[in-house]
Length: 135
Image (cartoon, rainbow, N blue to C red; front, side, top):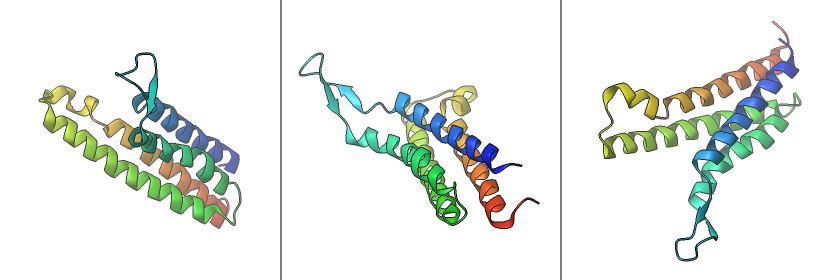
């Protein structure tokens, strides 16, 4: 497989994750004391920061062979942290509310975790291609 195809897939995974986080964790929240104005929420911004680092830094690091190892490492760290955070908040949300069993998987962050690990696997394939060449 060509490096450009994998690099494009890695970029699209990261861009999709960024758009998803931006939609779910919008960091400019309405100010109840001043209608019509917004307040910056740094906690929600941190949730958007991981995919932003993924889209900019990880993609840039994977562009050359010399920095691909750092891209692979950073991509793996982001996926592991994202998995832990998303699973934690999903479990906390499920236990706080009594969600019926059929909707349990669909209302959880399991699909988002799957997307994150797909991003990691594309990064691994790109890293292997950089290090070993085409197989």
